[in-house]
Image 1 (cartoon, rainbow, N blue to C red):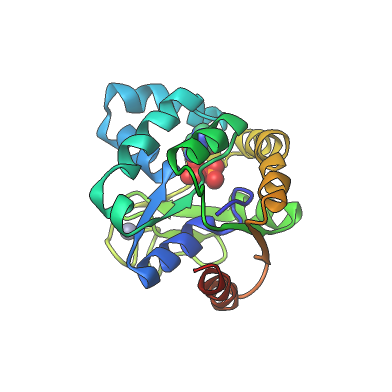
Image 2: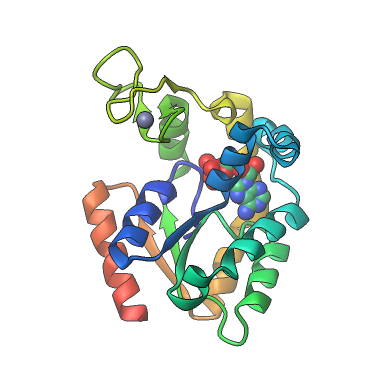
Amino acid sequence: MIGKQGAGKGTQCSKLAAALGIAHISTGDMLRSAVKAGTEFGIMANEYMERGDLVPDEVILGIVEERLVQADCRDVGFVLDGFPRTWAQAIALDDLLAPDGVKLVINLDVPTEVVLDRLSSRRVCTGCGRTYSIYKPPSSDWTCDDCGHEVIQRADDTPEAISRRLALYDEVTSPLISWYEAKGKLVTIPGDRDFNDVAAEIAVAVDSAK
Ligand code: ADP
Ligand code: ZN
């Protein structure tokens, strides 16, 4: 699934992966768990993430390749969330999945004004990752309704990091959309609607690609 930051990829991918009984592979989540674990790798990645920069391709490719060769991904399949985001990543993924490449690319399309508002109002649980917003906070004092951990603003949801991330999306990631379209793999789904309507449309697109 490809789409701007704040388009709702994380939520839709996790619903889709659960419905299909396949792995949800989010490079952002993988990186955030490394940061949380305080590994050397996490500390290095965090320097890029806090600024809103992309983590270098070699690093991302290493973690994705390692994950995709595991039995569940190889035998059953997977949903990729937030990968690929650069030419180098897209080409490496094609090679990894040769000869067929990816089966389907969903472009979750949301206007920039909408994602800007979503990202600046977004708050996330430090325990389970559940997303809230300043408009829909947890029921008691910024502690998560599901797990009781603290709900905070992500370090890269500051105005500076948000504009950097969206600029990188336009420059580096969005060109992949027309590339996948030319390969006949792309379905564009408007994401600025009710969550369940978007999910239903994604399910239909996935069904017809099977
Ligand atoms: P968002 O889409 O809101 O930026 P993610 O959780 O997908 O959030 O990613 C958070 C950060 O992790 C990114 O800003 C980037 O620094 C890093 N990251 C995630 N996926 C990739 C990727 N495929 N290539 C490079 N960096 C990545
Ligand atoms: Zn939680």
